[in-house]
Image 1 (cartoon, rainbow, N blue to C red):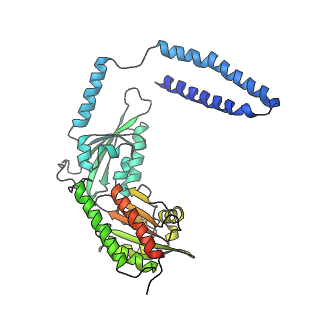
Image 2 (image 1 turned 135 degrees about the vertical axis):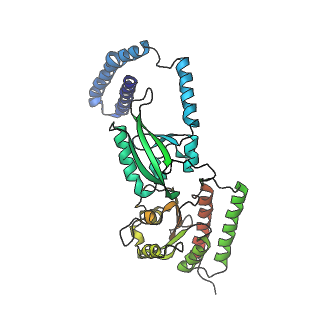
Image 3 (image 1 turned 45 degrees about the horizontal axis):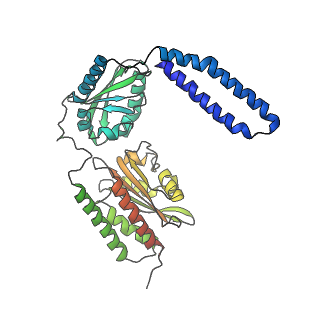
Length: 377
């Protein structure tokens, strides 16, 4: 496998150099002999190096697994999926490669969604650095490790994570097998673990979104227009609670960004003061939305500083236990960005979906129109 990978890399480099030689055909006629010499050198490299190596690899036959071995692999895959213990296979960067059925029930994350994403994204922020460090140590051969972590959707429940090195057949790098169990060693049933999939049907969810859009339209039409701060305050009142745990509104003016509204959960009064006192220019998400006019949807945001820090120096996303966010610029196309609306969901609340982001994008255009239309007597 290693020889095949090395041959593939050399072949890719050769193809790249040939492309460069093709592009060099437009050089002046006096320089063409140099290009010709390089082309002859590449052809000689193929004849003398790459072709003999290809014949050597071909003569050894395919490295495919025999029928019995394939059946054994299928049996092991089925065993991995059906074992009644939450198990995940990750690489040294904690990116999930496989997640068995018990792990999807235990974490509340679908296997298809988890695959290709870091497992640390499903942990509490405080545990992510330690888990990455231990996974890297296991992958480089420093021995098995075990540590206590907390799932982001159940931060009060300690989970014991056991990590061991595993070398998959035919792969050049070591993987890490992660076994997750609650601290009391009892694996909760799927009924006890809140999953990300709501019990409401798609039709009911769509109806709830339409109710939200109707409430937003009513709020915008029933009040004065043109007053940007007032429009944002009414919109934040509609969204707070029923759609998002936190609502932060910033206005774009001649002097830059200014924060006008911060609505937070009732038990986060002190945190709300910190967010209200923050300079929105120190929030990378807000600055990017105000500059580029594109909506940002984040689920279990990996960067704790994406929304900046409060006056005490703590990352706001960590302090608010943000599990999902929407950062929406308020603009009509074409037109400048007049403000930015940022929504947080925290704790075990279901993450923002693509359908909700689309509905929020539609409401943002209505908000922008209400902010830009001069007030009528």
